[in-house]
Amino acid sequence: MRVRLTIAIVKTTAEYVQDTPKALAIAPAMFLIVLFSLTLQVFAVVYIWTSGRLRKGSEDQIIPIANIELGPGQGLALFFMTIFFYWTSYFYVDLPKMLISGSTCIWYWSDDGEEKDKSVDTSVDRTMRYNIGSVAMGSLLRA
Image (cartoon, rainbow, N blue to C red; front, side, top):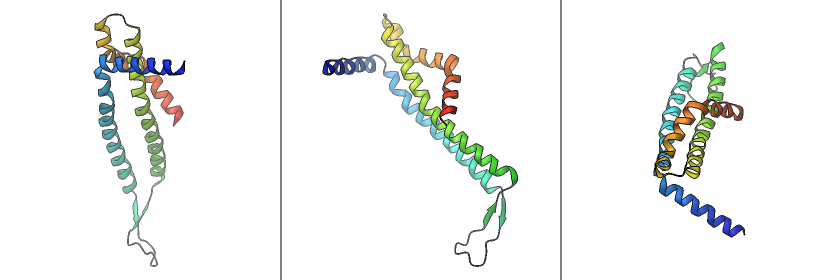
């Protein structure tokens, strides 16, 4: 019984991928978005970190690098950047799940071929209109 169920699931998955090739574009698109976001976050953290005061190290210090003394708000800013990093990381993991699951539901329950062709577009539209807040809140709770 389990083997038949597994075969049926694999067949249905193959039909979905064959009918909606746009679903395969979600992962590369999210990769580019994540790469851009992480680049901005790294620049922000480096800016916050290096905007502190330079303090000369002690004489017995082995590494010839000056220490950076953070200001009162900089530690808090780095703390919030850490939370923001985790939040956006979970968000970028959860958003493709929402898009693909919405697309799969639309594809599975539709009868006509035109609606199956536009299942990814409809899923993106519905997710961005109605469910983006749920994805963001769930990501925040996970972070």
